[in-house]
Image (cartoon, rainbow, N blue to C red; front, side):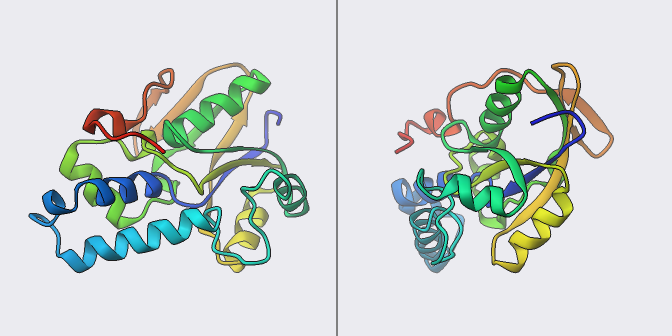
Length: 195
């Protein structure tokens, strides 16, 4: 990973965490959402995570055996799987490993509407929420990588760029700030274990 490369997210940030909340607190969620909505979230979330987050039978990118070849073949030079601590932790770890900074636009990170709604109900940050099945990738041509993943059925987007220095800048529209160190997964605020 080097300055000037694009940062791409493949998969949905926080979906695994939203699914865990739906599994652990279905009665509570049913006060705000129809039971069918909660059941669909649990089913879709389990399927997403079971398929390594990608829903593609031919390539489970998240497996240790296939990830390097699968990501490299699609144009990625480096990647970090998101998990506990969400996409923020993955970004932090990846940039820290290469002593580089980045600029990312949070609005470009793929997040499902169900994840947004559940996070709003509990006051959680979807970018710090369990994100199995979501990967941050660095590539020379992130647009081409994201386009290829989309044609394969993977939600993907270019979210920013790698830059020199160690500043980890996060934007949301006109609001700019810097990423704080990773902390416990948002599930811990609800007393739910990230498993």
